[in-house]
Length: 77
Image (cartoon, rainbow, N blue to C red; front, side, top):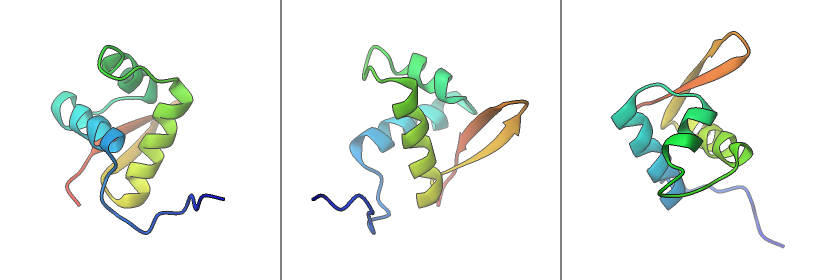
């Protein structure tokens, strides 16, 4: 069985792609990230949410709540 808990704080390739998107385009929802990266890396919205949460856990992103949506911003750890 694969260990899903990573002790590595470096972003994966997909996480880095999402982080680069956030840094270039500014704060975005998971749907905005998914739509913005669709041509380069198609993904489901649930995947985008998971990647954004992982970036937040690793210290590369933060979020604010706007109504019922989470808006993520990239940060320098």
